Each structure stands twice: as structure tokens, then as C-alpha cells.
Image (cartoon, rainbow, N blue to C red; front, side, top):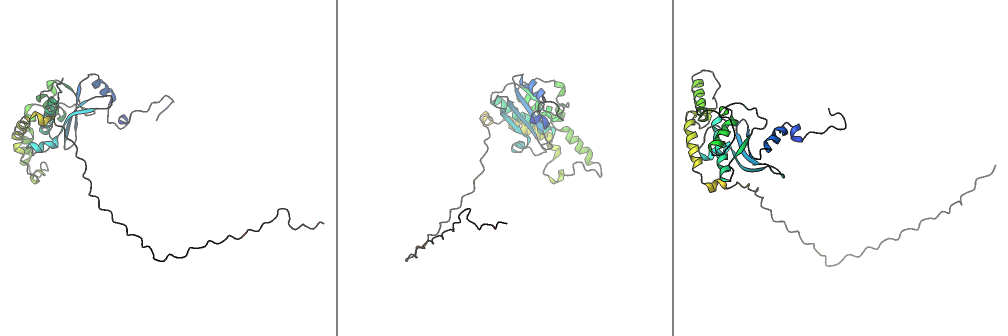
Length: 251
């Protein structure tokens, strides 16, 4: 509870637990672009953002669901997909003049070898200069997805397990993930610089075709006009003089 007249209400995003403003201030003092990495259960989002007085301006961005346009058919919530997403965002940022940046993980815990640092490795491999320690980055075997293949081969021989039970419903072969990583990476490198510079414009929602307004029927004018009504004269009100009532009998 707030106490005292000098209590200051915290910022809305601080109250909602979305932003650590002390960490954000230290990042902004570096005067560099920020690599903002955010992850969900099924996706990884990487954005390169410049701070401005008006507000944060996004220079380049990429989301893991875009990888399906470049030949990726596996899950978009794993570590290889995070690496490729960071690689694509780094290529776009480099084509738009960004040379160096600093990592912003937000409120995510800095776990060694996690998806956050897999995306960071992708940005570094794209050519951006980011200060980091090599020990926190995942190794090449995890970047290529070999640990996923090994886990799939292990659990496929165990009876009664529910691991990888939904994979059969999708047209995805887990054993080909390492080859897909190399293939998609080569495809991203072949994208022209002009295509990378283009920013996606959001299409305005198509407006429904307006129906033609129905014409109002014309009023029929009668040939013979009806007689005009004569207003009644109001009856005169009875005026009662004040103080001229019946006098009471004196006793």
C-alpha cells in the first residue's frame, strides 16, 4: 500500500512486470542499437531497435514463423529456429546500415546456451558486432539441431512414451533438421540486398463494397388539396379577484 504524500506511482509497464527501467537505462546509455529478443512457446522474435525521444524505432525485425517461406518445415519454437531467426534479422539490419548493437533480453533469465543466445549467435554470424562472451553461446551441434535428433531416436525406442507423439500428424521429419538448417541458411544468404532493405508495409483491411442506397419513393401529391384546418379559439380564463371571497361571520 502507498503511504505518505511523497509516494510516487510507478510506471505502468513496471507495475505490469514488463519492463526493468534500471536495466533499460543502462542499455540506452551505451548509445547503440538494441537487439531485442523475445520468445514464446512456439516462436522467437528478434528486433533491432533504436531509442528515440519520440519512442523506440524498429530498424529491422524477424519472426520464426517467416522461416517457412525459406524452406523450414520443422518447429519454430526450438533452438535452430531461433538461430535462423536471428540470422535473418541480422542480415536485414546490416543491409540498413546497422554495424554494431547490444543485446536486450528483457526480463528473461540469462541461461547459458538458451534460445536467447542462439538468436544472438545468428545475429553475430550475420555480420553485426555485438559485445558478448563466447562461453554463453550454444555450440554448433545444438545450433544444427543434433540434440533434437538424438532425443527423437532415444524416445522412439521407448514404449508407452508420449514424447514426439504429435510429430506423425505433421509432414515433418526430425532427422532432417541439420540439413534444413544448412539449406535455409544458404537460402537466406542468397537474398538480394534490395529485398532485405524493403520494409514490409501492412496492408489496410479491405473495405466491404458499399451497397447502393435504395431510392426513396416520391410522395404522391393529391390533385385536390384538403381544406385547411381552422384553429379553435381558446376559451377565456375566469379571473378571480384576490381578496374578494366570502367574509367569515364574526362571533
